[in-house]
Amino acid sequence: MAINGKRVIVIEEHYWDREVASHFGPTDAMRGASGILERLYDHGELRIREMDEAGIDFQVLSHGAPSTQRMDAETAVKVARGANDRLREIVRAHPDRFGAFGALPTPDPRAAADELERCVTKLGFQGAMVHGPTNGVWFDDKRFWPIFERAQALDTPIYIHPAQPNEKVAEAYYKDYLKDFPGLLTAAWGFTVECATQGIRMVLSGVFDKYPNLKIILGHLGESIPFSVWRITQALARQGNRDTSFSFRDYFCRHFWITTSGNFSNPALLCCVMEMGIDRIIFSIDYPFVPNKPGADWIPTIPLCSEDKDKLLHGNAQRLLKLS
Image (tube, rainbow, N blue to C red; front, side, top):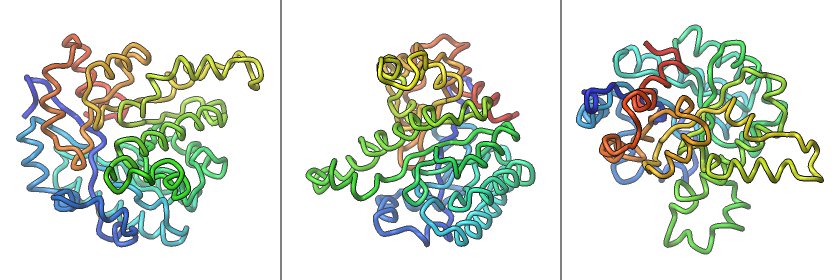
């Protein structure tokens, strides 16, 4: 294993739990087509073989979108707890290859905070992942702040992952092209817009003033926010905004980590390094929606020194997630 002699840890690598997926709508279920579904449900032989073939040493597993974010509160609590218990068994079967981000029943925020604590302190998980708004409510809404309070107390990160945009957004922005280019709604652009908006809302909400040690992870090289961070910062500091001394960039670079999941571009990576610093960037694949090989093939071409490449490939993940 390893690539060019370097240990490789990836942290946005998805699976599906059958009980969770049984609650998905037809559009979400369709994302398991073309061999992906087999890999989402494989937690052993196939997954590990493909990790070995690519030189990947360790995956942090997380449930695929939309996970439990669209369930009613009672159902979400029950389903998330069961899924996390089963995920613990997956990790126990291969503890040298897998870690875990838990699924949170965000429709019941206080139960979600308790489940986060159980995942970290009882199940040994590295944090949790949530997918898009919860039944249409953005994650920065104050009803969810008990989750952030608990995450800070536990010193554990929350990974915010996109889900499909709501129907009104899809209708207004994308419908003309979805017949020929369905990926526009998801990874090609819809996911980026939806999750970047969530990241910006987190900064504006004041949650990082309330919880100054809160840690958030965004995938896909920060959903393009690093490319726009100067402009966002300057525009929000113009006259007419609430506080002209407000620095979006300071909050973003202090509280966010980003991953390379599904975005293997040297120019984009170098932009992120220049805006955020290498210590905030973690290598990831986005398996199985993105195969391991493109990410593995990219690694030797990355124009970083050996020390910084070590941080990208494993060191930053080890520090943030407390991995050995």
